[in-house]
Length: 118
Length: 487
Image (cartoon, rainbow over all chains, first blue to last red):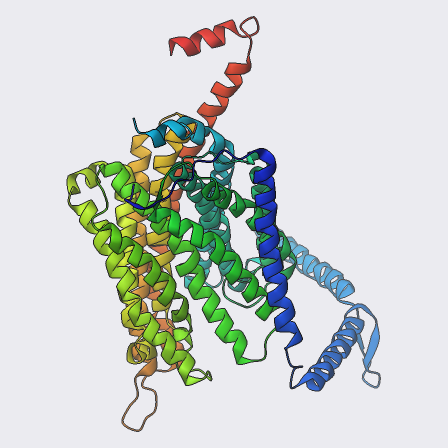
């Protein structure tokens, strides 16, 4: 244990009520400190220089995301003259899985034929 | 027996008053230590092999690495700090911790907040600011639960039953006030009402530096100042110097954070002030080193034989190294080379792990037998823990620092025409072997932590069995109770 620094008589036996008041007092003082920091800082905070740009960019971002979401879950034409369509991602995944399963089945059948043929 | 000791609470009563809250914090600390170690291991495997677990977006490096750091800082370090600091405070004040129930509840809420925060990081709700990555919705719960935990340390000090004040109490009391100040100011200025542009970087650098120097370090130093003289049974070498060390640490280290921004678009005086303060930090570091090392090395055999002191002295040697290296790297010419390299990660690990975590391990090994009245089940596991962790952290830090120095030199190397000698991607590639060495260190650390966790679990299992057995009446379990008596 490190050496003593100071001496002061402090032999007290506080009751539960006194301790609770002290605890609430400490927490209250800390919360008031936080509130003062927040209020004094926020009230003196200048508005962002590029507030308008931020709003415009957020609006553009929201539009881009809405368009992307719309394209990801709906059917639509990509090029009507060439007959190219866009399908929802879920449907595309189903078709891809089916296609891969068919290829795998075909490969297995041809392997079995190869093995069976002398 | 002195008058003072007659009036103070007996040590066993003090330990009893904090037994369950401290155990609660330590159980969480061990859980977070394991979680953090595993996440850290995953993040370093991903650095050496980017294809590892690449199909899970929630396990990308950008999420796993901050989750690991937060688990280690707010999970392991803070829980260990709460247990050790409150216990030392209660012991030195010779007054038991009051409000154990409230302390347990606050501890539970703190850990719920940390769990939700780390889950938020993994989920993708991360804030891209060092040490403040946890989402904003956990901040109020963290602040309130922290206040409800720290208040009992302050209450203990307020109603202390001894005449002396020890330097360990200085550190703990100050840390209990510093952390909420740092955390709330950083949260307000970066997350809740973000300051303009570069001010955010300044606040971030200030917070991340002071989280280490004004929260983690004081608790580690308090534990070292308590344990080294206590275990060796001799006073601190120079007590007055210890107090000077405290005040100089408080004065200088809080200014030194902005040195990390050297070369950035920050007012020059801010960085220059930090550099000057960073150099002055050498004063408390030398004072603390002198006090702890002279006291410990005076009885070096005792240090080697005692597992608690091995951890604590290893931690204090690391603190001295971290402080000295920090005071050298603060210089602009050195900072230009090591900035944005793995060297800074090595420095951070030297401080947060090699110093703080090792001191905490030593403290826990000392604290638990006194708290529970039970010895650790396996001395061999303690030895394995020390060997694995000390070797692992030395390997990890050496790899990061050496790799970082070479990385910095390569990134700054220019030919005669002023063009870079090394392409950036090649420099990144050259760090590969160093990261593999660092990974080996991480594996050793995880092994050490597992040894610690197994030992701790066995201790808890023994405690639970004896607690349950005490409640079993003789007519229900006579055979069981008899076998316990015999054993």
